[in-house]
Image (cartoon, rainbow, N blue to C red; front, side, top):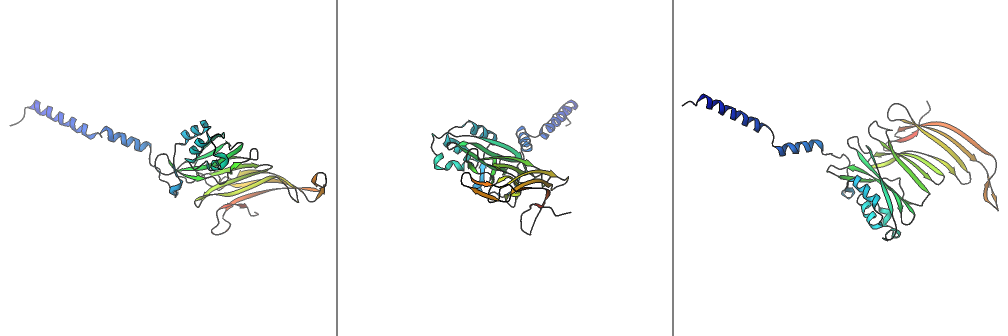
Amino acid sequence: MLAHPLRRIALLALLGCAREVLAEPPPSASGRQVRELAAPEVRSTVECPSARRVKAVPEVLARQVAAEKSTPALRALLQSVHLGGPLEAKACREATVPASARLELIRARVLSVDSEDLLLVARGTVCGEETLLEGVVLHPSGAADTFCAIPLPFLPGLAEPGRFSTEVTVENLTDPVRQVLRVTTNLQSVEELSYWEWQAGALRSIASVKWGIFRGERRRESTAKVSVVGAGFPRELEVQESVREWARSAKSSRDGRIYEPGSRTKKRTYRLCYRRESPGSPDAYVECPEP
């Protein structure tokens, strides 16, 4: 028996509406898709020992470190990201010893071009009046808020107040995407500019220029200006150097060692090129060959 025409039209309309509703994904599935697109998993290409894996929210940690004045609590906060080693010293373990520190956060692509790293540099006054100066690179390890902590080898950990200072920035020097660390250091009367690059599973120094006052049998005073030159990558480094040297010295019973007249000053400009000196050696900057 055929259905009444009006009933058949209503039935078809109802079935059509049902198909439209079923064609749309359930709200919970749609929500999962949005979250997955907003926060894709980052796959690390850097091998990380389990002992170097840490879990942290760096921005929150930085606020906690800045607010903490208790030595044991500050040590615990820093150790959560493999910092705070110098605070294990006997002089630092007492809860009554004042301590204060701050974390500098620098975002850069240091280890690979695929993910952004976070540099943490801890600065402060601990163990009485000593200067805390250490740091790590936090490299994303896949899971949320999980990183591989890689130490910065050029920072001393602890330094006497007023004797050591350093600044860390990043620069595109050898690659248009992956960056190197630019480190300027002042140790008493000697200044140094060095560049550090991730090579073969470690941060390695690829260039270093020092200037200042050097004492010994021959006193030497030097100044240097380092500029990045060239349009392509790797870039070249141009060094403008001035060296004043005293060739002879004499002893004085009243003033210790004094330097006699007879100094000479030499100036030169040279360039450093990025290359490998021998098979198996790391890439580094060496003086460019004469054109």
